[in-house]
Amino acid sequence: MGRSASQDVLITLVVSAVLIWVMPLLISTYTLTVLVIYGMLGLSLGLIWGFGGILCFGQAAFFGLGAYTYAIAAINIGESTVPMILAVLVPAVFATLLGAMMFYGRLTDVYLGVITLVVTLILFKFVNSTAGPQYVIGKARLGGFNGIPGFQTLNVPGDPDAYVWGDPFFYVCAVALVIVFLLVTWLLRSSFGRIAVGIRENEVRMGLMGYDVAARKTVLFAVGAAIAGLAGALFANWGEIVTPNLFSLGQSAEIIIWCIVGGLGTRLGPIVGAAGLAYLKFMLGQQSMVDNTLITGLILVLFVLFLPRGLVPAIASVLSSIFGRTKRRPNASRTRRARHG
Amino acid sequence: MDLSFVILIEMLYAVASLVLISAGLAVVFGMMKVINLAHGEFMMMGGYATITAVGLGVNVFVAMLVIAPIVVGLIGLIVERLVIRHLYGRLVDTMLATWGLSLVFIGIATMIFGNTTTGISTPIPGFAVGDYQINGYNFFIIVVSIALVIAMFAVLRGTRAGLIARGTMQRSDMAAALGYSPDRIYMMTFFCGSALSGLAGAVLAPLVGLVPTSGGAYIAKAFITVIAGGPSLIAGLVSSATSFGLVSQIFTFAISPVIGEVALLIAAVILLRMMPQGITGRFFKGKM
Image (cartoon, rainbow over all chains, first blue to last red; front, side, top):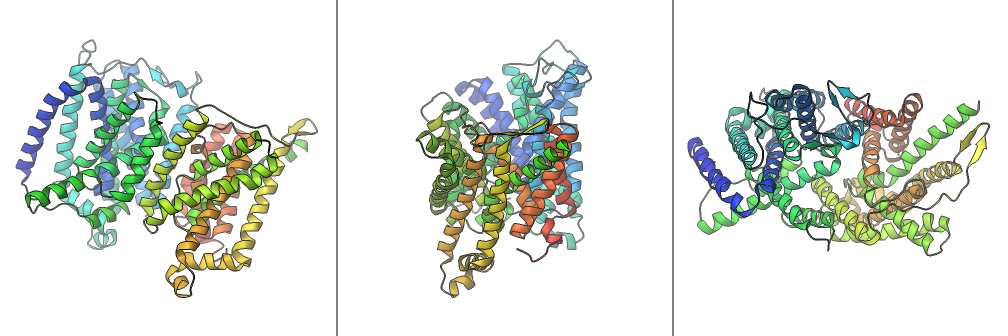
């Protein structure tokens, strides 16, 4: 990248500050909050897929796991600070175990996809069947397909009665997204990030150069899961209920679609894709002329056929050709290879 | 004695339905390397085609075994011409595009048939074995899937069309050099795969209440079965369907249906971890 690290941080901060200031004037903060949360979820898959070449079908599993961890812990503890931390840690640990099993077994592309898909399904089926009173963790009933309502939502650390909701909750989510974005930027600029991209490009070569490919992929996978878990915990706070639908295949599909539409191999693309498509879905939900699913599907098909690189890289290349700047952008061949893991 | 007979039938039925669910995908994914995530929706459309045809007064068996495969095959043909043929060789892109297609089909089905459960009654009555009642339709499914496997084997192994199709999938440039158009062969193979999916959906339709989203119930099972089967089409299909069918039925009888489903999925994860190339990557090498 052409810019230095401090310039990058500065631009990010200024742009996001302007957005956080302007956007609530256009869209209600209640809707914006969920867009921000989805953006974070998109970023989590964009990191491991776009930069690590790991196509995970089960990003929703970590999202749901984060949400459930938060809900269960919040009911048992009655305060939100520890549950938030747990909601990041539990998916990360789970992803480490799952990732270690897959990457040390040298599973790649399709098999990786199927295993992550299957694990999501197992979680979905299991949680769906836990309606009976015998499924209890501490004081929290799992509730099966009804989900878990009525847990302690986000509060000021140390003061369980000072709830953070409404506008302040939006600012918390937005700031969290900015922090995560900066952390991801830092990670990708570090040697770990550059080696991860190297593994995406040519796994065998990186292995022969002496890097422990399996360990690095596992760590990257766990980082992605931690971000998804954080998004899940925020989502639980936003919706004030967690249901097994968080684990569903449809949710996983949506995350993948966001990344494709936004643009793989960019940090911004998945966020833009997630927020944009979620908003579009929200708008479409207000009319009943055409079925919502149909339009989502059409968008995906059309993007794969006509704009396989996604929106952000396409716009960036148009801009750079207009202004004649010679910034390095992920070109088509790189992105395509990234997708084929 | 009676109980063991019932269990035997149930096990055979579980294996047979897995074979049926996966057959279409085995052709489309196993042969053509197109990850067809719309497979479940092809089955869903097969079910709707059957129900619509029966509603118009067609004999139920004709509707299931003739009309549904043709209708879904034709839909598959249109899809192949419009979308899939631009994406051959791009594994992940086919997956994303077909995922989009599956959403489109769900949307269309919801607009046409509404988001309600429809169904037809099973055309074969049940009968009693000792103290137990057996669903006679289960026998029909077992027979259909055995016939299907034999037919697939016969076509792929015994006919010239099967030979050309297999050759084209291995080396399309050689097939083209010998004067066969890979484009048309791919098209026909996709038609056959879709028709098989439609058949499966139609045959299973009387057993399940049909909603536009019911394809999702099949897709994961079908993929697990086909991928765990490995490179050999028919041997892989039968062997992995058998192992998964047995595992899930044993746990279903021992504990509960939900545990049976979960056991199937866990078995799949373990199997793929032990044999990343699938069952036929290790055993039955080089068979059909």
